[in-house]
Length: 83
Image (cartoon, rainbow, N blue to C red):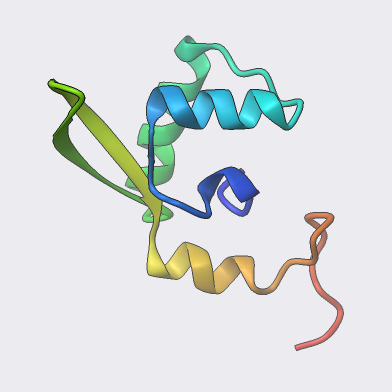
């Protein structure tokens, strides 16, 4: 999931969920938020709390290591055969 186009820009949970749904990946909130926390714990995502639209929201973005490791995959999500 972190190599998904939905992660190309920084997003908060709701917009991320909507972007994934627009790409055919409907994820319930009860699944998405624990997954985001797990990806952050694994060092694949970074997050920060900010005020947006007069509310505090947690924004997520890919970590450097996730960007680097996603370069080793082809667009279809399979490991690249060239280095």
